[in-house]
Image (cartoon, rainbow, N blue to C red; front, side):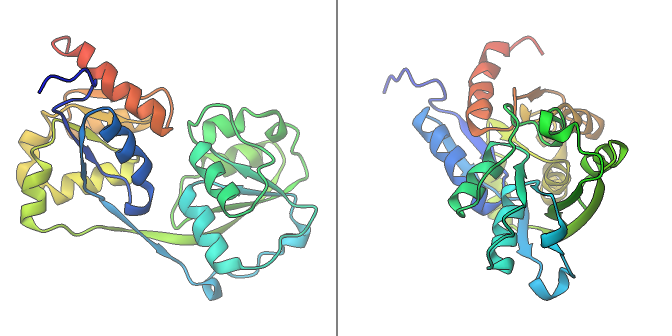
Length: 253
């Protein structure tokens, strides 16, 4: 059957955690593609009893670094937030999760490119003397905290979830290798993908890979991936557009 949908006949491997993949998978299907759901990271909430004291009544900014951070925090906190507290998101997905949970988003970058975009916002410039609590997973990146510390803020963390590598059976791994393109949205996810599909690594490195930052691209190339494209930002729409644009690059790699 002839179709003018841009991803018609293509299989796309989506490696996002289970709860974060639905919207992207729907967009891929609307564009005519077949999305292969293959999460490589499982998200496990850290119990509230292990968070430690938060002192939100003395905090100026609460920064959420991911949708997982929002959902795990809301699951564990279950109280009203102090009225003086201002809330920030690193990108669209995080902000959407905040609004879905009934939270106000006081600061959100125009482009979803992680902590870099948030750090460019005017609200994050004159932050000297402010108390900032960053809500993240266990072992997150330090750039956001380091930069805000350099600007004079006092930083604390609350780590509300942890990541584990998802297990897949052999048949699921074989099915994953039928993908025409791969999507990876984190360094940890890319490492897990390579571990899970280690048996097929030589073939894996030959498949077109889409990532959402130059940092992940550089890591992918160091692992051995030959064709790596970076989306304009981390939003699902940008990822979809890049998937479509990659076909125009065919033969140029």
